[in-house]
Length: 70
Image 1 (cartoon, rainbow, N blue to C red):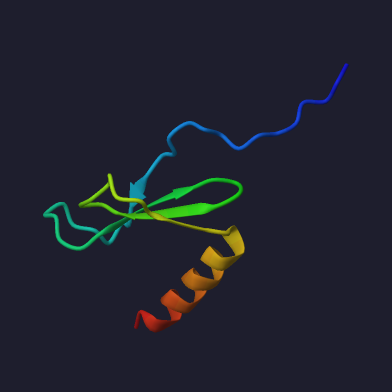
Image 2: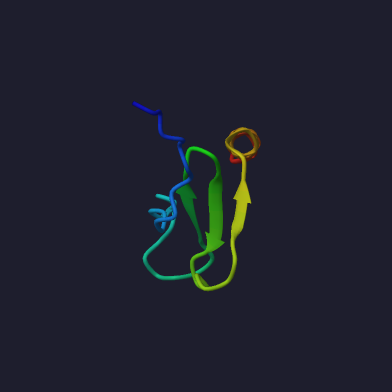
């Protein structure tokens, strides 16, 4: 039996908004996580390309962002 190579999923990722987002629109981003990357996009313009970063870079960003939220 041959081992299958793991391939990145081509299915659309599950996007979610921050729990701090209100339901009234406004400025908001959506995030979708994958094993190989974290994707970020503007929730008001989902057709526009988003940003993909590595999991380590995302974790660093969250660490910095959480320290600045006082």
